[in-house]
Length: 637
Image (cartoon, rainbow, N blue to C red; front, side):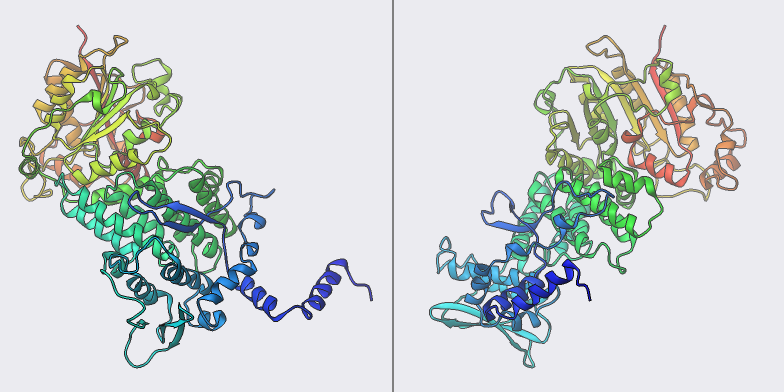
């Protein structure tokens, strides 16, 4: 019988193993168990000097067919040397027995608990009588989710070393049994009682319940520091599956500023979990999609983002997901904050938030601020793109990140050399909104942008429309583009129709007042450094609002519509069969002869580049909702 070389090699290895020592067999058993990834020490927060062990992947992770390269992503057993096994055995009596009482994956659970025991015994930087370092609290917190319910951790001394083992639990839940003379319980902190996901929810809850509070960020950052401590302690072991993406998204929505290490750590945990579970039958394509969409909505970028998206693309491809274009964008690194799917998440969030009224905003903003444009922008002489009522800020964040002007949306409009063809990298960008939480979200994205494309070029302010436009009068440069995108509509003046919570048409609660339009018209007359004048773009989902604002603009006598190359010739043809909005039906029923949003003043196609559209416009595209767009300029003589 012929024996192949591969089979012969296996036989030789098996025969050799029969002569190795018991110690080596024990080491090999552990090597087989541990799903150990390459370690990366990441500094988590400026106030935390300890380092967090997390999992990273190789930056180039494709083989010839684009699959996950096994040499780069499978466990690295070489990291588990004999010295590692000796260290583990130094602090416990039986590694294998302990692992039987730990939750899966047991080797990772063991590693996290062993790390705390090492600090208790060998961390000389912490005085023995330091009550602020609550290692016992750390162990209790970890035991609550890393140790199986029928076991407790028992600490005991052996040759002046504090060791640990698992013992069967008695009737009462204890968690950690310890000798009082060897370890003391210090101050219990928030991170001992709440996991990273719950802490992220607390931060978001604080932000959304006080959307007009300008002083909420310090409180949120206190929670972030607790989350950073939790991640140092748990090494992400309490963020299984897609949970790290949810926590990341929550922190971003809460408006966390800077803290790049927090977001990077969460994305590295996401990479590890996607590698661990992405190809399992129980992991559906929608779980993978939701995970990467939420990470992208936080604008994570860099090598770890590319790795995360690539792995997700490979997993979706192997699961037979049908959207090949999406898979390619994930694998090729084209997926990100500008992509439609992450922006839909931002729209879902913003659409559920309570609208901040002018009266509520004014009561929380005791003093009006004088904006120092030279302090906000590196070069305040650049032309400015403005978004009044900027919401989540997606449009400005993505326009400012563009590297050229070649991604124009309304091709036929721009191909004629009209005024809307713009060099986006040459502008500054400013947005304003009454909702402080949304303002903080946008500024948080800017604060974590390591590409430096947005820093010193983009800023969001918490100001009313009138105050914001008034402040723009002092801007040193010209105004290239002023946008009002999808403002909350006014209430239809029809008996028994519409949403009673909406403002009336002629109240100052509806953002686009005649005073606001007069301020816009004044700013359009301000030339930039090249001598050009700006444009005013108005967009809405409500046909009656579009007609109303258009007429108010023209009645001022200082603005005129820019004729569109792709006009809406018949608005009724734009509405899908039987899909005309209820608001339009009610409006036309009350005023059958009303002017319609059609003709050369209304564009059928978007003016903004695909990657620079606001989240609401992206949602409209997904839902096939008609968008009414008008472009204005200063009236020529």
